[in-house]
Image 1 (tube, helix red, strand yellow):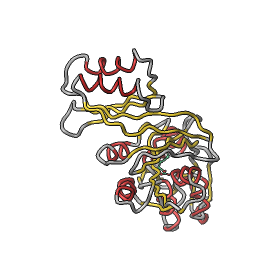
Image 2 (cartoon, helix red, strand yellow; image 1 turned 30 degrees about the vertical axis):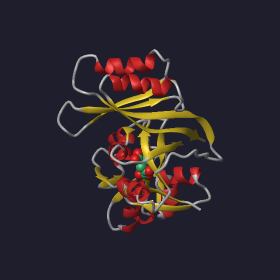
Image 3 (cartoon, rainbow, N blue to C red; image 1 turned 180 degrees about the vertical axis):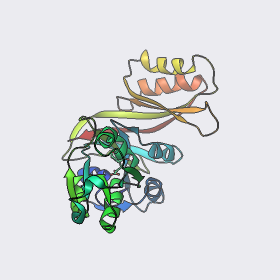
Image 4 (spheres, rainbow, N blue to C red; image 1 turned 135 degrees about the vertical axis):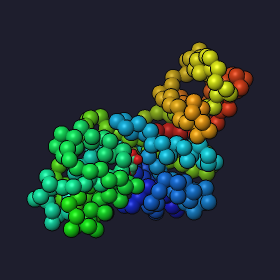
Length: 282
Ligand SMILES: O=C(O)C(=O)C[C@]1(C(=O)O)C=C[C@@H](O)C=C1
C-alpha cells in the first residue's frame, strides 16, 4: 500500500484533504511543504498532498515556487470547504477576550482579518507553519493568553475548546489541494465528486517585449481553450521578471494543447506542463 505525505502535523486542512482522497492509506505528516515534496522526489512516499490555492487568500506561493523547480507532476486535485474556528486551551475559555496573541497559518489569519479587526483589534498575529501546528502550540502553553485559528479536527486532536465558529470573512471559502507524484499516473479518487479535468502549465516569456503575453493568450483563445487561472510569480532574478501559471479546463489532448504549446514555444517562450489531472470535491 502506498504511503501518502501531507502538510502536518495531524489536524491540518491538508489532513482533511488527504483523508478524503486516500481514506485507506498510510498517511505521513511533514512539518513543511518542501520536505513533503522532497520525500516524493526521494521515493520515501508515493504521493504528496499540499495546499495550492485558497478562494479568499489566493495561491500558496511556497507550493508553487518549490514545485516549479522539482521534477514532480500534479496527478490530481481535491477541493475542500474551509471553515475557520477560534479555539483556546480549556483552562482559558472564560478570559479569551483579553488574549494577547492568536496563532495560525498566515493564510488562515488572512481569511479572518475582518473578524479579528472587529472583535479582537489589539491581538497580535503569530504565524505557524500550519493551523494545527498553531493548535498544538496553544495546547502546550496553557499559561499563555493565546488562541489558535483552525478546524474542528485540530480542536479535537489537541483538546482545545472552540469559542467562535466560522470566523472566516467570506462564506465561499474553499482551498484547492494538489496531489503530487514522481510519475504521471491516472489517479481515481473514490468517495469524492469528479468535477472535471485541468492542465496546468508554467510559461516563461523570452524577454520583456510588447504584446508577448497577449500572443501567448491568443494561442489558447483561438483554439477555444478555456483558462480558469492565470497568475504571475516572480522569477527571483530581478524586478519585472515573471513566470506564469496557467490552468486550462481540459485534459491534455493530442491536438489542441500540444498545438498551443508549439505556437507559444515558437514565440521563444519556455513551456513546462506541471500536470494534467482530474479534480474532485465533496
Ligand atoms: O494550515 C493548514 O491547516 C493547511 O492545511 C494549510 C492551509 C494553506 O496553506 O492555505 C490550507 C488551507 C487553509 O486555506 C489554510 C491553511
